[in-house]
Image (cartoon, rainbow, N blue to C red; front, top):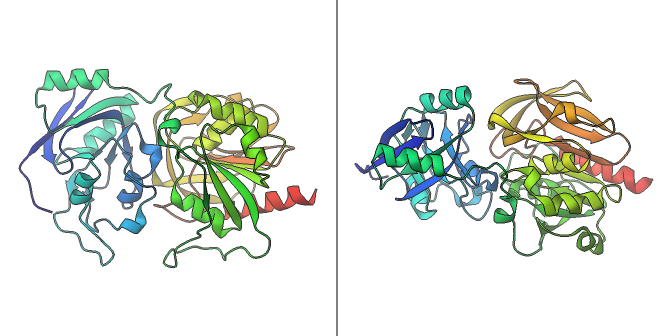
Length: 379
């Protein structure tokens, strides 16, 4: 990466303005400020569609030291609105890398800044809650920048799933790459037909499902239930995605028509949408969960798993109806991390069992989904 002396600024709606160095695309971007506690996986984070509408601050102090490898993309493009670092590595070293992080950020048109106090930004977010911000390489006027931050659109009430979803249905059959460190043998025997709702699906979720014996038809977020049933699937999967789950009304209506007809498994936004359909409520969290080191207890087994997470909304535990069982709890703040229906083959988790980046403690949930489908078939 060529060192640049170009200035950049990040301004927060509370009036804070920090000056740093421009290390990505030139321009300006706004969004909800979030911090991610993962030490690696910045490429997967940036290409996760769940980060649409958000400006990502990395808490680890040195980012970019292993560059960017095209095969690690979790979608077709970067979705984070802007990227904030303490320091971007000046040299990357990785035999798999195609280019530096700085070059990639320019190519992906992601505004990025380093040389700022990311500890300050993280503590501010933890203390004050969700804050809007602007990152700019073109405007150095503090008053102007703060005004732009205060005028920025929040993720509250926004159906961002409709922005990031695929335009047309497509088939997916690819499992893990040979180099991927999966902990599970590939499923043998019958393969099941699964319709996967794309609310912002990561590729490794689709690979994980294919690895566990599912042949996928991925459909847009607004696909009606009748179109799904016409495909004659064995089950339905609800993917991760960005924004406010309560705003994804077409999907809520569609999933409501599918519950009781097919086994359903949801992850992240899919978990939140399913919870709403089943009678629970969601709310925006003070600063969300974003990272690869969150401890979650599986109440059904007593096992604690270290998980990868990325969500700013959560299901309200007190709103869970009697028909739902609380299966997983976050041990940092005791928020809802998983549910299952007491009589229907329906369950979901808030975190990311496919990781990427993150630990593989929870990858067994894809096999659990297969077992649920097999059980429903047997009945």
